[in-house]
Structure formats: structure tokens, C-alpha cells
Length: 414
Image (cartoon, rainbow, N blue to C red; front, side, top):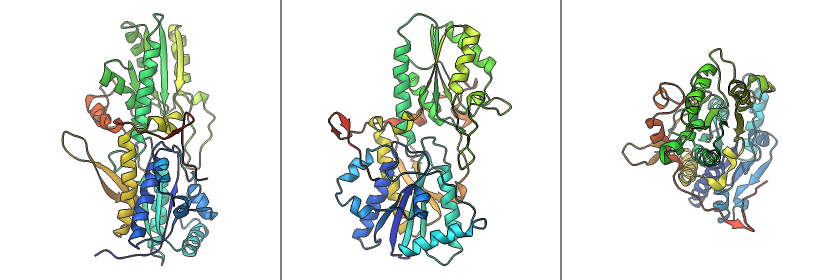
């Protein structure tokens, strides 16, 4: 028999935004509203800018913000983080007890008994630390991590909310680039740089046009394999034997056998609060190398922010699952779970279907899910059919945003 716990709830968003993170927020809100109707949860607050906003008591009354329930549909189709985001790294409780004492004070002040944090790997680190702290202190609260990240690098979940929409955008944009590059007969190389520091999941999506239409990129390179520039140039030479216009997709996090980033010479060296260096320049570095080796026309294209904010091209599957996993997180908390992350599971069978579960956040924080060996071809310059089959259902379906004066309508909370 689950133990009833009545009090208020709070939700926040953290890390890099996605085209689907607000759909997950909408799922949490809908789940809490349903619990309110059953008198199981009191008020619902939103943290502005994640943990930073919580510590500054910058809270939004989400009951009031969504008194008009129709706004939730707008929220589902709004890109970026409607509550704002942050990249604040929580210290260990023993290193900074004052920060945790302040969080406890704020929770007592607002009678917070349910805490939902929507984010990626670093956000789950915060969830793990808060869970451990409150387990050791006399305050009953249920703390649930809710996944998001276009990088798809969270362990214990089949895929992450936001990845399917980013993959759809990448696949579509690469397909359009292929059309554009095919119009000339002069030799040229186009290098498409795609996000992905440690895991190449997003770059694998560049294989979809070739797999689904028969016309695709010549090669793609992932951080899961050491990058060999000689082999890369040999691949291009082989592609020129087939056609004059070569298109290649690369992950921003490509490293050589010594662990050096390919674009290291063009980077500033600046790092975020979690010690991650800001990456850029991989495509440009390879552009210069190709120009020197072949003397042909070369361009590099960095897809950059549109990969994560192109909500006009979101995957309907991704948006639906993002809402569902947010609502599931509330169900987990109501059932008495805490210190866990809601997960998406892939049902067995020929047709794709998702179900939802949970895993201890301590097993998820600070771990990285890489593209597995069976998804990468032997040469390390492409993907296998197993990878394509994994990706295909995640980009299926289109959303229908509301438009006004020719532009999508967004839900603005801050």
C-alpha cells in the first residue's frame, strides 16, 4: 500500500533546451493537475532557471499560468525551456552544507513535497545529490528526474525526449543539403558538423536519407571511433571516383587516437560549470584539410542551435512520448518512488511501441550511453542496418503548431 504524502510540487528545467522539453513540462503539469483533482497534491510551482531560480526563490505559480488549460497545447509545441534553464553544478552536501540547508529552508517555506527536474546527464547529477541529501535528513520529499537531451546519451532509457525531433531535423536538413549539392558537376566536398561531444547519436541520423530514399551522405564519422585523417581523405578520394559532389557528416566531438579533438586548434578552451569544453570548429578544421589535399571547392556547415530548437519540424512520436514520460514521472512520485528517473522503454516486437518505467538516478548520473558497436560499420565511416531500424520510428509523424500572422505561436512564461 503506497504511503500518501500531501504537499506542493515544484518542477524545473536544466541544461540545453530541446524542441520537446516543454512537452515534457506539459506532461508533468497535466500529471500534477490530475493529482490535484484527487486532492493528492497542492499547488504547483515552476523554478525559473532551474536550481539557480530555486535558490533565489524565483518561482512561477503554474496553477495560475495554466488556468486556461488550452495553453498546455501551445506549450507542447514551443521550443526551448519555457521556465528557463541553467548549468549550475550542485556541490556535494559535505562540501557546501549551506546550499543544501537553504534548499531545505525553501522547501519547508513552500511546503514542497514533490520535486521534478527535467534535464540531461548533469541534471541527473543534481537529482542524485538532492536525493541522497534528503534521505539523510528529516524531511519527507519525493524527488524524480525526468529525462531530456538531444544527445540521447542517458543510460537506462531506450532514448531520450528531444532526440527524435533533433534527429528528424538533421535527417531532413541533410536531405535538403544533398539536393542542393547535386546540381553541379564540378568537384566539391560539403562537411556537415552535427552536435555530439561524447556520443554520436545525432550524427547517426544523417544516415536516414540514404537508408530511406536511396540517396544519402557518402560517409559519417562518430566520436565512438578514433578519427584517422589519412583514412578520411582516402574515403573522399574513393567517393570522387563515384560522383563529383561528396557530402559527409561529422560529430563535433571527433577525437584522434591520442584523444585530441579534431577541431582543437579552432576552439577557445572555455569550459562550462561541469568542466565541459565548448566545442566548435571540427567541420572548419576538416574543411581546411580537404582543401589542402584536393584543392577543390569545400564548405563546412555547422547545424548549430536549430538542431535543438526547430519545433516546426518536431517528431510527433517524440512529442507524444515526451508528454507521456512527464506524466509518468508524476505517477512514480505518487506511487512513493523517489531518487529515480522516469524512463522510456521499447516494447519487443516488429512494430514499434513505447512503455515507461524508472531506474535509480544513482545509476544514471555521470554515465554516458555511446552508440554501440553493432550500430557502427566495420570501417567506422557509417552505420549498420540495426542502427537505422533503431532510429526510424523515433522520427515518425509531424506536429501541427498553431500559426498567427504566418508564424508559429509560442507559450511564453518568463
